[in-house]
Length: 206
Image 1 (tube, rainbow, N blue to C red):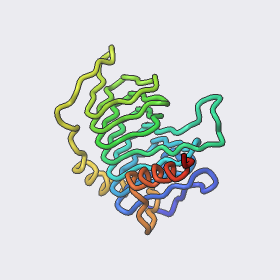
Image 2 (image 1 turned 90 degrees about the vertical axis):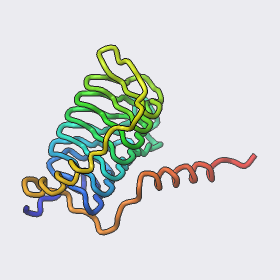
Image 3 (image 1 turned 180 degrees about the vertical axis):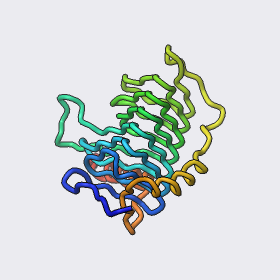
């Protein structure tokens, strides 16, 4: 399709080759996508408190929201990078404002994860479920039902590789896509490692 572009005064979006990121989404701030990601039209990704780094093979459906904002009254001079791992699924109309997200998680339709929450690996936040109090959701936890019950998964959620491959082929025929950059963005794991190293180097020597 034609060369429709994002507004560089509003966002700085970096897309690795092999991803299909629809330009009709709502993007604000510095956002990086790893390889093989799919972002549907009308998704909303807001990086106001700092960059959002999204790893490989993430599926972000229509009207899904990923938001990195400062809490009211917080110190806005210290940016926070929201790092999202690989192979996560953000279903229609979910809203994720978590501090960090691991790998292989599913955020079902209309689920909500608030600030101060850290999501481990292989978790499922069920449809209409909310996590709004600061907490760490341990690996392989399922949150489900109107009472937000929890149980442990024996296996991680199934991979979406076939669906991602299909969408990567189909979406370019019907939607404008953000052009990929020639240089592959760093993986979320690499950025996390660099961040930890930087924090350790910054600590005073006792």
